[in-house]
Image 1 (cartoon, protein in one colour):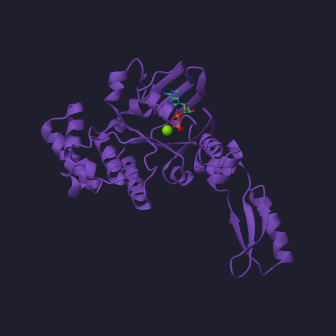
Image 2 (cartoon, helix red, strand yellow):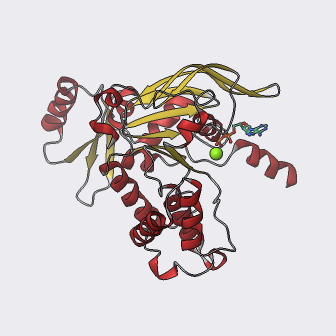
Image 3 (cartoon, rainbow, N blue to C red):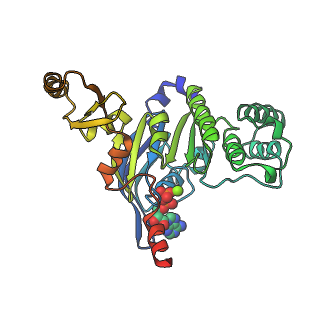
Length: 311
Ligand SMILES: Nc1ncnc2c1ncn2[C@@H]1O[C@H](COP(=O)(O)OP(=O)(O)O)[C@@H](O)[C@H]1O
Ligand SMILES: [Mg+2]
C-alpha cells in the first residue's frame, strides 16, 4: 500500500496554487489555492460553481489556463499518463456501456488498466458483490436502475485499486437507500487506505463523509475546513428554550464560548428555572448561507430565471 511509503505520506494529495480557468471570456475558476493531505475530502458548491471543471482539471481531462497543480505530487499536464494510472474518475453522468453486462463493463475497464483477464475477473466479482450487483452481473446495463448504473460506474473505476478516487456528485439523483449504500462504500474505500475527492451539493453528505470541506462559490474557494471549523466560523451556538411539548419558545444567540453560553444560561436559570434548554451549533446550511448569501442545493438561479421567462 502506497501509504506505507514515507515519501508518499509527505506528499500532499492535492496542491494547487493560483489556478485559473476560463471558457472563452467566461472565467469559471479564479486564482484557487488549496492543499489537502491524503484522506476523504468534499468540494461543496451549488450548480455552476465550478466543481466539475476543477475535478476534470485534477483528473487530467481538462487543461487549465494558469497556476500550478499537483495531484499525488504529479502535474496533470506533464505527468498525464502516470497520473491516470493512479486515479479514477467517476463523472456526474454514468459512463458505462448499456449494451454490455455489468461484468463485461468491469472486464473492459480492467483491460484498459492492463489487468490480466484472471485478475480482472476476480476483482470484478469482488466489487460487484460489494456493490450488491452480483445477481445483476450478467444482465445488460440497459436493464439497470439509475442507482445500479451509478454503483457499477463507481465499481468499474475501482478495478485497478486507484490511490485517489474522484467522484463527481456521486449521489445526485439517487434514492435515500442507494445514497446510504454509496456512503458506506466511500467510507469503506477510505478505510482501505484510498483517498477520495468528491463533489456534492449536499451539505449533509459533506458533513457525513469528509475530513475537509472546501466550499466553492462562483469559482472561488469561500471556505475550507472541517465541518466543525466551518460551523465555528459563523460563530455562536444558539440556546433554545423549549416548552414541555418540545416547541421552541425562544432562541438566544451566543458567541459560542463556554463563558458566554454560561452567562446566558445563568440568566435563564434565574428567570425561568423550569424551562427545557438545548444548545445548538449552526447547521452547514446556515454556514453556507452565511458564506455565500445563497442557500445550498437551491435550484440554479439560471434555471429559475428561465422558468420566469417561460411563465
Ligand atoms: N465546456 C464548457 N464551455 C463553456 N462553459 C462551460 C463549460 N463547462 C462548464 N461551463 C460553465 O462553467 C461554469 C461552471 O460549470 P461546472 O464546472 O460544470 O460547475 P458545477 O459542476 O459546479 O455545476 C458554469 O457557469 C458552466 O455553465
Ligand atoms: Mg458538475
